[in-house]
Each structure stands twice: as C-alpha cells, then as structure tokens.
Image (tube, rainbow, N blue to C red; front, side):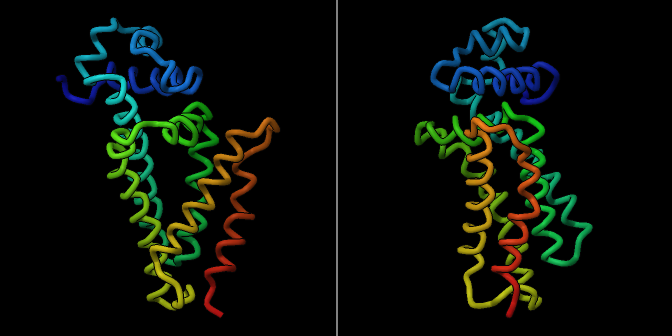
Length: 195
C-alpha cells in the first residue's frame, strides 16, 4: 500500500467526504469515490484496503488536522475559560465551514459498524484528552468547581457540542452553527465556575 500522503491521497479523502455526505456510507461505492476524485477505481486500493478503510482514514485525517490545530490555538491561552471558549469556537467553526464533513462526522459515522467505531477511537480519544486537560487545569488552578470528575465534565462538554452540531446538521431550518458558540460557552462556563 502506498504512503498515506500526496495529492491523490488527499483528493480521495475529499472525494469520500463529498460522496458519503451525498449518498450515505452504505450507498457510496468505491467507484463513485474514485470518479469524484478523478482517479481510476484501482488507484483507491493503492492507498486504502477497502471502503471501510477510506472512512476510517477520512476520520483520522480530518480529526488529526483538527486536534493539531486545537492544540496550537490553546497553547497561546492561559485561562481555562478562554480555552473552553476557543474549543467551542473551533469545533463549531470547523463543522460549519464544511457541511459535507459535518454530515459524515455527525450522521454517517454513527451508523457504522463496530470495526469502524474501533478504528476511529484513537483520534477521538485524542480530542477527549484535549478537553479533559482544559477541565483538569481549570479545577487544579481553582477556576472550575472541584466537586466534579474531569471525565464527567469532559463528557458533558463534548456531548453538548456534539448534540448542538447534530441538531444543526439535521435541521431543515437554515441557521449558523457559529451563532451557538456564545450560548453554549455561557451555559458551560456558568456550570463550571467555582462558586
């Protein structure tokens, strides 16, 4: 198998996002992805084992880019409340910028097989760790209340962002996901603030 870099690899990943968003994972044949990427069907198999590997790789690539960007952005911030606000902003801005990707991440990955869920676990855990690090810092430095578990708080922060994003993707009403940044931050920050 070829290295997972280069123009064709990225073209296939972008094509997979579009095709899966439009057709759903189960109705997205490798041939459709190849056609969208402008490559021969066989070229897909130089980079990926099968369609499942394409979906897992798509998630790993996109989530890897996101977590690297989030770590870089958070590095410049000291206050855990600022970090929380930045995480919410990055999460919603990224999804709003690419609705096809949002559809794949929020809808298609949820309907996947156990092997796919297992394949995406590591990059998702990396994102969870970023959130949990912010929570742990907030608790240890006295910004956040200390009567809650960092893991539970992380689940609530991610769960809130995830549900808001899923509702946006599935809504028949057109609105901006980024308009939800401030209300979500305000709600979570108030719940976390040390009394």
